[in-house]
Length: 310
View 1 (tube, helix red, strand yellow):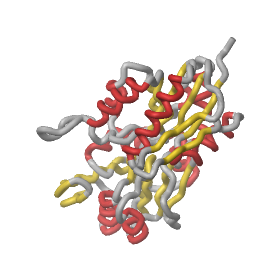
View 2 (view 1 turned 180 degrees about the vertical axis):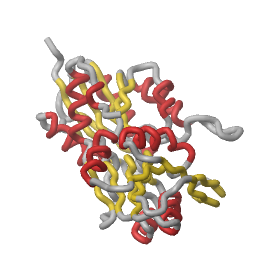
View 3 (view 1 turned 45 degrees about the vertical axis):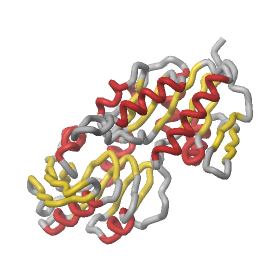
View 4 (view 1 turned 30 degrees about the vertical axis):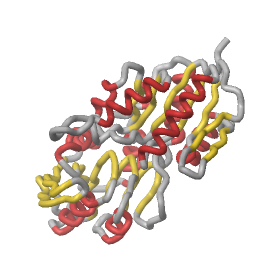
């Protein structure tokens, strides 16, 4: 007999988890959250998970507390005799720490993979990792999904002429090139130097953008420094319009102010991370149906290849 399926959520991904559960056709599982005065907290399942296929939805933005809550929920499910435990992590925090880029630093993404393994996770489902090689940090199945399943139909429905696909930096060229090939559009690259983390120094745009409708693609927007600077430079160099598509709306520090004051026409993001505030320039597309479909296929031991457009 197939083990029953249940979907649960951490505190800060509840809105997305409710959408995923609704799309799947079941109620979101009941949990409680006890917080002590010193900051310690304890998540708890308020229904049985014994013998169940348990999916725990939790993006690890503001990474430490959300990550640790996820680890506690996994441990609790394991100790309550869950059959299988799948960590659904739409936004995988610490993903920028995927290598030693200078002496005496940690590889945070690998450490997170080790923690998830030690806690008892059987499988990980995530979306648009900052670095693809993070999948190799796990000795378990990792289903790496892409927001292109949402973004490409949206781009095609805009029916933009003179379309150009842009990468905000050298690291995003592979993603931009994949979109450019699918859309049969030319690609340009923004070359930047950083003064330090989250602070952009010099930036140049490599390629022709005059009279073009530019689409900038990225996996995340953090402080929006790179994005807003690239958009402003492109507009100054004659671009007809500049739009941005990014999976994860981290949007920390002055990000909202920078986006609102920039030359960007609109910014399209997903709900992998809930917005802290609203903006007329920011539009959110929901990934709930994609994750619900993948959860259904994992549960029924089906291929998820049909989820990918590119």
